[in-house]
Image (cartoon, rainbow, N blue to C red; front, side):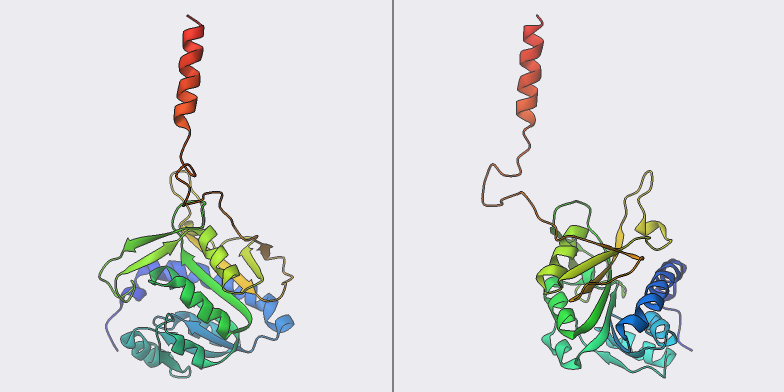
Length: 253
């Protein structure tokens, strides 16, 4: 048996259990009405969710960009086929079409997440499930972040981290006509805002057709009022407020 990997650490165990519970609840409700039979797990890592999806009665293909992950996933789940492919590579589309496309913990590790999402849309026949770390903020923007030199980070160890608004907008712009959030997020602190901590993860569902589920809330496509080409757009008008306060103070003598 091989030595434990970073994805075997206790942190990932707790995160995967909470994510797995949310995925199971959702797919148990949608699997039969949507006729979900086939699934591709993009960014499958060591195969945890590939195994979960198989246990839910789906025909699974696991895909990861790291050869060592593919080899280890195949060792752990011999009854599931795995292949190596970078999600940003157009060769991903050659895999065909799947009822369900599953992509957890990957998009924020990519240099070109929008390209990857376009590939995911091309693969999706009925339903896409994505999960991602999100950059703080309400604008549909991304930040280029330096990552650590560990096997659970991006292939080149720097990536664009999107805000949740940006991720939602990318799903729409990639071609999906309906995007949803979970009505009740996974039971893990990274999906919930705390007293002294922000929410750092999101889980989204996208489809070309409307979905009816008590577990989902429809999300509109985000927009921004900032015009980057306008030097006055996005500038805080704090000086106006300061001037008003000064004049009021002078008037009072």
